[in-house]
Image (cartoon, rainbow, N blue to C red; front, side, top):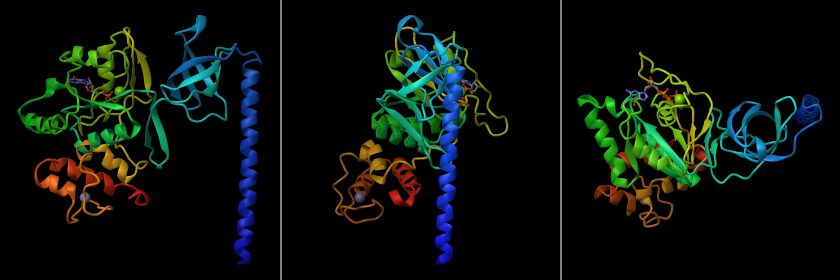
Length: 343
Ligand SMILES: Nc1nc2c(ncn2[C@@H]2O[C@H](COP(=O)(O)OP(=O)(O)OP(=O)(O)O)[C@@H](O)[C@H]2O)c(=O)[nH]1
Ligand SMILES: [Mg+2]
Ligand SMILES: [Zn+2]
Protein backbone atom coordinates (compact mmCIF):
# COMPACT_ATOMS: atom_id res chain seq x y z
CA UNK A 1 0.00 0.00 0.00
CA UNK A 2 2.70 2.42 1.12
CA UNK A 3 4.64 1.54 -1.97
CA UNK A 4 1.71 2.35 -4.24
CA UNK A 5 1.20 5.74 -2.55
CA UNK A 6 4.83 6.55 -3.04
CA UNK A 7 4.44 5.65 -6.69
CA UNK A 8 1.48 7.89 -7.04
CA UNK A 9 3.38 10.76 -5.46
CA UNK A 10 6.31 10.03 -7.74
CA UNK A 11 4.00 10.01 -10.72
CA UNK A 12 2.55 13.32 -9.65
CA UNK A 13 6.03 14.83 -9.42
CA UNK A 14 6.98 13.47 -12.82
CA UNK A 15 3.81 14.89 -14.35
CA UNK A 16 4.43 18.25 -12.65
CA UNK A 17 8.00 18.42 -13.92
CA UNK A 18 6.89 17.43 -17.42
CA UNK A 19 4.11 20.03 -17.37
CA UNK A 20 6.54 22.73 -16.32
CA UNK A 21 8.94 21.67 -19.01
CA UNK A 22 6.19 21.84 -21.68
CA UNK A 23 5.14 25.29 -20.47
CA UNK A 24 8.74 26.52 -20.64
CA UNK A 25 9.09 25.09 -24.15
CA UNK A 26 5.89 26.80 -25.27
CA UNK A 27 7.09 30.10 -23.82
CA UNK A 28 10.44 29.68 -25.53
CA UNK A 29 8.69 28.93 -28.83
CA UNK A 30 6.54 32.04 -28.60
CA UNK A 31 9.63 34.09 -27.74
CA UNK A 32 11.46 32.64 -30.75
CA UNK A 33 8.48 33.55 -32.90
CA UNK A 34 8.45 37.13 -31.61
CA UNK A 35 12.20 37.51 -32.27
CA UNK A 36 11.81 35.90 -35.64
CA UNK A 37 9.24 38.48 -36.49
CA UNK A 38 11.43 41.20 -34.99
CA UNK A 39 8.42 42.03 -32.84
CA UNK A 40 6.85 43.61 -35.90
CA UNK A 41 3.80 41.80 -37.12
CA UNK A 42 1.25 43.04 -39.60
CA UNK A 43 -2.35 43.68 -38.59
CA UNK A 44 -4.70 40.81 -37.83
CA UNK A 45 -6.54 39.58 -40.93
CA UNK A 46 -8.49 36.54 -42.05
CA UNK A 47 -7.00 33.77 -44.16
CA UNK A 48 -7.65 30.30 -45.51
CA UNK A 49 -5.42 27.31 -44.71
CA UNK A 50 -4.61 25.70 -48.07
CA UNK A 51 -2.05 23.13 -46.85
CA UNK A 52 -0.34 22.14 -43.63
CA UNK A 53 3.06 20.73 -42.82
CA UNK A 54 3.37 19.74 -39.16
CA UNK A 55 4.15 22.95 -37.28
CA UNK A 56 3.66 25.23 -40.28
CA UNK A 57 0.70 25.91 -42.53
CA UNK A 58 0.22 27.68 -45.83
CA UNK A 59 -2.31 30.45 -45.56
CA UNK A 60 -3.95 32.33 -48.39
CA UNK A 61 -4.70 35.94 -47.51
CA UNK A 62 -8.37 36.77 -47.94
CA UNK A 63 -8.40 40.50 -47.27
CA UNK A 64 -6.88 43.72 -48.54
CA UNK A 65 -3.93 44.12 -50.85
CA UNK A 66 -2.43 40.70 -49.96
CA UNK A 67 -5.64 38.93 -50.94
CA UNK A 68 -4.97 35.71 -52.88
CA UNK A 69 -1.28 35.59 -51.94
CA UNK A 70 0.06 32.57 -50.06
CA UNK A 71 2.16 32.78 -46.88
CA UNK A 72 3.89 30.21 -44.69
CA UNK A 73 2.79 30.67 -41.11
CA UNK A 74 3.82 29.38 -37.71
CA UNK A 75 1.18 28.30 -35.25
CA UNK A 76 0.94 29.84 -31.81
CA UNK A 77 1.58 27.05 -29.30
CA UNK A 78 -1.90 27.19 -27.75
CA UNK A 79 -3.81 26.64 -31.01
CA UNK A 80 -5.73 23.43 -31.79
CA UNK A 81 -4.58 21.30 -34.75
CA UNK A 82 -5.43 23.18 -37.94
CA UNK A 83 -6.39 21.48 -41.14
CA UNK A 84 -6.76 22.34 -44.82
CA UNK A 85 -9.92 24.39 -45.32
CA UNK A 86 -9.72 26.07 -41.91
CA UNK A 87 -10.37 29.79 -41.75
CA UNK A 88 -7.99 31.62 -39.46
CA UNK A 89 -6.90 35.00 -38.17
CA UNK A 90 -3.23 35.60 -38.94
CA UNK A 91 -0.59 38.31 -39.02
CA UNK A 92 2.09 38.73 -41.64
CA UNK A 93 5.70 38.76 -40.40
CA UNK A 94 8.48 40.92 -41.75
CA UNK A 95 10.67 37.86 -42.46
CA UNK A 96 8.10 36.40 -44.84
CA UNK A 97 6.77 33.96 -42.27
CA UNK A 98 3.51 34.89 -40.57
CA UNK A 99 1.80 33.77 -37.40
CA UNK A 100 -1.63 32.21 -36.95
CA UNK A 101 -3.37 33.97 -34.11
CA UNK A 102 -6.74 32.18 -33.99
CA UNK A 103 -8.85 29.53 -35.65
CA UNK A 104 -12.32 30.58 -36.78
CA UNK A 105 -15.21 28.19 -36.05
CA UNK A 106 -15.63 25.33 -38.56
CA UNK A 107 -18.83 24.93 -40.53
CA UNK A 108 -18.19 21.24 -41.15
CA UNK A 109 -15.39 18.90 -40.20
CA UNK A 110 -14.52 15.53 -41.74
CA UNK A 111 -12.64 13.44 -39.17
CA UNK A 112 -11.06 10.05 -38.86
CA UNK A 113 -9.01 8.37 -36.16
CA UNK A 114 -5.28 7.99 -36.82
CA UNK A 115 -3.39 4.71 -36.28
CA UNK A 116 -3.36 5.32 -32.50
CA UNK A 117 -7.10 5.92 -32.37
CA UNK A 118 -6.72 9.69 -31.94
CA UNK A 119 -9.35 11.65 -33.80
CA UNK A 120 -7.85 13.80 -36.55
CA UNK A 121 -9.68 16.25 -38.78
CA UNK A 122 -9.04 15.61 -42.49
CA UNK A 123 -10.58 18.76 -43.96
CA UNK A 124 -12.69 21.64 -42.69
CA UNK A 125 -15.60 23.60 -44.14
CA UNK A 126 -16.30 21.30 -47.09
CA UNK A 127 -19.87 20.75 -48.31
CA UNK A 128 -19.24 17.84 -50.68
CA UNK A 129 -17.30 14.61 -50.10
CA UNK A 130 -16.29 13.04 -53.39
CA UNK A 131 -15.64 9.34 -52.76
CA UNK A 132 -13.32 8.26 -55.57
CA UNK A 133 -12.84 4.64 -56.60
CA UNK A 134 -11.62 2.87 -59.75
CA UNK A 135 -11.40 -0.51 -61.47
CA UNK A 136 -7.79 -0.53 -60.24
CA UNK A 137 -6.88 -0.56 -57.35
CA UNK A 138 -9.77 -2.93 -56.79
CA UNK A 139 -12.63 -1.12 -55.05
CA UNK A 140 -13.92 -2.16 -51.62
CA UNK A 141 -17.60 -1.52 -50.95
CA UNK A 142 -16.95 -1.56 -47.22
CA UNK A 143 -14.60 1.41 -47.58
CA UNK A 144 -17.22 3.26 -49.61
CA UNK A 145 -19.80 2.51 -46.92
CA UNK A 146 -17.46 3.79 -44.23
CA UNK A 147 -17.06 7.06 -46.10
CA UNK A 148 -20.84 7.28 -46.46
CA UNK A 149 -21.26 6.83 -42.69
CA UNK A 150 -18.60 9.49 -42.05
CA UNK A 151 -20.30 11.86 -44.51
CA UNK A 152 -23.68 11.38 -42.85
CA UNK A 153 -22.09 11.83 -39.41
CA UNK A 154 -20.40 15.06 -40.50
CA UNK A 155 -23.53 16.33 -42.26
CA UNK A 156 -21.69 16.57 -45.60
CA UNK A 157 -23.26 15.52 -48.92
CA UNK A 158 -21.50 12.60 -50.66
CA UNK A 159 -20.84 12.08 -54.37
CA UNK A 160 -19.62 8.69 -55.61
CA UNK A 161 -17.09 8.94 -58.41
CA UNK A 162 -15.85 6.01 -60.49
CA UNK A 163 -12.62 7.09 -62.18
CA UNK A 164 -10.59 5.25 -64.85
CA UNK A 165 -13.61 4.15 -66.89
CA UNK A 166 -11.07 3.58 -69.69
CA UNK A 167 -9.93 0.51 -67.72
CA UNK A 168 -13.33 -1.20 -67.67
CA UNK A 169 -13.09 -4.49 -69.54
CA UNK A 170 -14.76 -7.88 -69.76
CA UNK A 171 -12.96 -9.11 -66.66
CA UNK A 172 -13.90 -6.37 -64.21
CA UNK A 173 -17.04 -5.01 -65.90
CA UNK A 174 -19.60 -7.28 -64.26
CA UNK A 175 -18.32 -6.80 -60.71
CA UNK A 176 -18.10 -3.02 -61.21
CA UNK A 177 -21.64 -2.84 -62.55
CA UNK A 178 -22.86 -4.82 -59.52
CA UNK A 179 -21.08 -2.40 -57.21
CA UNK A 180 -22.50 0.66 -58.96
CA UNK A 181 -26.00 -0.78 -58.93
CA UNK A 182 -25.92 -1.12 -55.12
CA UNK A 183 -25.47 2.65 -54.77
CA UNK A 184 -27.74 3.54 -57.67
CA UNK A 185 -30.54 1.61 -55.95
CA UNK A 186 -29.93 3.66 -52.81
CA UNK A 187 -30.23 6.88 -54.79
CA UNK A 188 -26.71 8.19 -54.20
CA UNK A 189 -25.41 10.57 -56.84
CA UNK A 190 -22.86 8.73 -58.95
CA UNK A 191 -20.59 9.80 -61.80
CA UNK A 192 -18.31 7.80 -64.07
CA UNK A 193 -15.25 9.55 -65.47
CA UNK A 194 -11.77 9.06 -66.81
CA UNK A 195 -9.07 11.55 -65.88
CA UNK A 196 -6.99 9.95 -68.63
CA UNK A 197 -9.27 10.32 -71.65
CA UNK A 198 -11.50 13.09 -70.25
CA UNK A 199 -14.77 11.15 -70.38
CA UNK A 200 -17.41 12.57 -68.05
CA UNK A 201 -15.15 15.36 -66.80
CA UNK A 202 -17.53 18.15 -67.79
CA UNK A 203 -20.34 16.59 -65.79
CA UNK A 204 -17.97 16.33 -62.83
CA UNK A 205 -16.94 19.97 -63.16
CA UNK A 206 -20.61 20.96 -63.15
CA UNK A 207 -21.12 19.09 -59.86
CA UNK A 208 -18.10 20.77 -58.26
CA UNK A 209 -18.66 24.36 -59.41
CA UNK A 210 -19.53 26.63 -56.52
CA UNK A 211 -18.92 23.96 -53.87
CA UNK A 212 -16.09 23.23 -51.46
CA UNK A 213 -15.28 19.60 -52.18
CA UNK A 214 -12.79 17.09 -50.87
CA UNK A 215 -11.55 14.11 -52.90
CA UNK A 216 -11.15 11.03 -50.70
CA UNK A 217 -10.46 7.36 -51.38
CA UNK A 218 -7.79 4.70 -51.61
CA UNK A 219 -4.30 5.61 -52.77
CA UNK A 220 -3.94 5.28 -56.54
CA UNK A 221 -7.59 5.76 -57.58
CA UNK A 222 -6.56 8.96 -59.36
CA UNK A 223 -7.59 11.83 -57.07
CA UNK A 224 -4.58 13.97 -58.00
CA UNK A 225 -4.94 13.01 -61.68
CA UNK A 226 -8.52 14.31 -61.51
CA UNK A 227 -7.26 17.59 -60.02
CA UNK A 228 -4.76 17.91 -62.87
CA UNK A 229 -7.47 17.20 -65.43
CA UNK A 230 -9.87 19.75 -63.90
CA UNK A 231 -7.15 22.37 -63.32
CA UNK A 232 -4.47 21.89 -65.99
CA UNK A 233 -2.32 24.73 -64.61
CA UNK A 234 -2.00 23.02 -61.22
CA UNK A 235 0.19 20.01 -62.10
CA UNK A 236 0.09 18.28 -58.72
CA UNK A 237 2.10 15.08 -58.22
CA UNK A 238 0.72 11.81 -59.56
CA UNK A 239 2.29 8.44 -58.77
CA UNK A 240 2.22 4.98 -60.39
CA UNK A 241 0.48 1.93 -58.95
CA UNK A 242 2.66 -0.76 -57.43
CA UNK A 243 3.35 -3.28 -60.20
CA UNK A 244 3.39 -6.04 -57.62
CA UNK A 245 0.09 -5.41 -55.84
CA UNK A 246 -1.78 -2.99 -58.11
CA UNK A 247 -2.32 -0.70 -55.13
CA UNK A 248 -1.45 2.99 -54.88
CA UNK A 249 1.93 4.23 -53.68
CA UNK A 250 0.76 7.06 -51.40
CA UNK A 251 1.98 9.89 -53.57
CA UNK A 252 0.01 12.78 -52.05
CA UNK A 253 1.17 13.34 -48.49
CA UNK A 254 -0.78 16.40 -47.38
CA UNK A 255 -4.25 17.72 -48.16
CA UNK A 256 -4.11 20.77 -50.44
CA UNK A 257 -6.79 23.22 -51.49
CA UNK A 258 -7.26 24.52 -55.04
CA UNK A 259 -9.62 27.18 -56.42
CA UNK A 260 -11.86 26.83 -59.44
CA UNK A 261 -11.78 29.87 -61.71
CA UNK A 262 -15.59 30.06 -61.72
CA UNK A 263 -15.89 29.77 -57.94
CA UNK A 264 -15.65 26.84 -55.59
CA UNK A 265 -12.74 24.97 -54.05
CA UNK A 266 -11.35 21.48 -54.22
CA UNK A 267 -9.21 19.70 -51.63
CA UNK A 268 -7.01 16.81 -52.78
CA UNK A 269 -6.29 14.47 -49.86
CA UNK A 270 -3.76 11.67 -49.33
CA UNK A 271 -5.06 8.18 -50.10
CA UNK A 272 -5.71 5.94 -47.15
CA UNK A 273 -5.24 2.26 -46.34
CA UNK A 274 -8.31 1.97 -44.22
CA UNK A 275 -10.91 4.30 -42.85
CA UNK A 276 -11.48 3.67 -39.14
CA UNK A 277 -14.78 4.73 -37.64
CA UNK A 278 -13.61 4.57 -34.03
CA UNK A 279 -15.20 7.93 -33.34
CA UNK A 280 -18.84 7.08 -34.08
CA UNK A 281 -21.43 5.10 -32.14
CA UNK A 282 -23.51 2.12 -33.25
CA UNK A 283 -26.45 4.51 -33.68
CA UNK A 284 -24.29 6.73 -35.90
CA UNK A 285 -23.45 3.73 -38.09
CA UNK A 286 -27.15 2.83 -38.33
CA UNK A 287 -27.92 6.42 -39.30
CA UNK A 288 -25.20 6.24 -41.97
CA UNK A 289 -27.11 3.51 -43.83
CA UNK A 290 -29.85 5.55 -45.46
CA UNK A 291 -31.99 2.51 -46.31
CA UNK A 292 -32.32 1.82 -42.55
CA UNK A 293 -33.84 5.21 -41.78
CA UNK A 294 -37.48 4.29 -42.11
CA UNK A 295 -36.92 0.90 -40.45
CA UNK A 296 -35.15 2.02 -37.30
CA UNK A 297 -37.44 2.11 -34.28
CA UNK A 298 -39.71 -0.58 -35.74
CA UNK A 299 -37.90 -3.62 -34.31
CA UNK A 300 -39.74 -5.53 -31.55
CA UNK A 301 -36.92 -4.92 -29.07
CA UNK A 302 -35.77 -1.40 -28.43
CA UNK A 303 -32.13 -2.48 -28.10
CA UNK A 304 -32.33 -4.78 -31.15
CA UNK A 305 -28.90 -5.51 -32.62
CA UNK A 306 -30.48 -6.65 -35.91
CA UNK A 307 -28.57 -9.89 -35.59
CA UNK A 308 -31.13 -12.71 -35.24
CA UNK A 309 -33.71 -11.13 -32.92
CA UNK A 310 -37.36 -12.03 -33.61
CA UNK A 311 -39.43 -9.15 -34.93
CA UNK A 312 -36.41 -7.29 -36.32
CA UNK A 313 -37.53 -4.78 -38.95
CA UNK A 314 -34.12 -4.77 -40.66
CA UNK A 315 -33.94 -8.56 -40.99
CA UNK A 316 -37.47 -8.58 -42.40
CA UNK A 317 -36.50 -5.92 -44.95
CA UNK A 318 -33.41 -7.96 -45.82
CA UNK A 319 -35.60 -11.03 -46.34
CA UNK A 320 -37.96 -9.11 -48.57
CA UNK A 321 -35.11 -7.64 -50.59
CA UNK A 322 -35.58 -4.01 -49.47
CA UNK A 323 -32.17 -4.07 -47.83
CA UNK A 324 -29.31 -5.42 -49.95
CA UNK A 325 -27.28 -8.30 -48.50
CA UNK A 326 -23.99 -6.60 -49.33
CA UNK A 327 -24.97 -3.50 -47.37
CA UNK A 328 -26.13 -5.60 -44.41
CA UNK A 329 -22.78 -7.41 -44.40
CA UNK A 330 -21.03 -4.09 -44.56
CA UNK A 331 -23.07 -2.71 -41.67
CA UNK A 332 -22.21 -5.75 -39.54
CA UNK A 333 -18.55 -5.50 -40.46
CA UNK A 334 -18.41 -1.84 -39.39
CA UNK A 335 -20.31 -2.40 -36.13
CA UNK A 336 -18.05 -5.35 -35.27
CA UNK A 337 -15.02 -3.09 -35.72
CA UNK A 338 -16.23 -0.39 -33.32
CA UNK A 339 -14.41 -0.10 -30.00
CA UNK A 340 -16.44 -2.17 -27.51
CA UNK A 341 -17.43 0.91 -25.49
CA UNK A 342 -19.46 2.18 -28.45
CA UNK A 343 -20.98 -1.15 -29.32
N1 LIG B 1 -5.96 4.39 -67.00
C1 LIG B 1 -6.13 5.41 -66.17
N2 LIG B 1 -5.19 5.68 -65.25
C2 LIG B 1 -5.39 6.71 -64.41
C3 LIG B 1 -6.55 7.53 -64.48
N3 LIG B 1 -6.45 8.45 -63.50
C4 LIG B 1 -5.30 8.23 -62.87
N4 LIG B 1 -4.64 7.18 -63.40
C5 LIG B 1 -3.34 6.62 -62.98
O1 LIG B 1 -3.46 6.11 -61.67
C6 LIG B 1 -2.22 6.26 -60.96
C7 LIG B 1 -2.47 6.93 -59.62
O2 LIG B 1 -2.93 8.26 -59.84
P1 LIG B 1 -2.89 9.40 -58.72
O3 LIG B 1 -3.61 10.57 -59.29
O4 LIG B 1 -1.51 9.61 -58.21
O5 LIG B 1 -3.76 8.72 -57.56
P2 LIG B 1 -4.17 9.35 -56.13
O6 LIG B 1 -5.54 8.87 -55.84
O7 LIG B 1 -3.93 10.80 -56.11
O8 LIG B 1 -3.16 8.57 -55.17
P3 LIG B 1 -2.57 9.06 -53.72
O9 LIG B 1 -2.07 10.45 -53.86
O10 LIG B 1 -1.50 8.07 -53.44
O11 LIG B 1 -3.72 8.95 -52.77
C8 LIG B 1 -1.32 7.03 -61.88
O12 LIG B 1 -0.48 6.13 -62.54
C9 LIG B 1 -2.27 7.69 -62.88
O13 LIG B 1 -1.68 7.94 -64.11
C10 LIG B 1 -7.54 7.22 -65.49
O14 LIG B 1 -8.57 7.86 -65.63
N5 LIG B 1 -7.27 6.15 -66.28
MG1 LIG C 1 -2.73 11.97 -54.92
ZN1 LIG D 1 -33.61 -5.06 -35.48
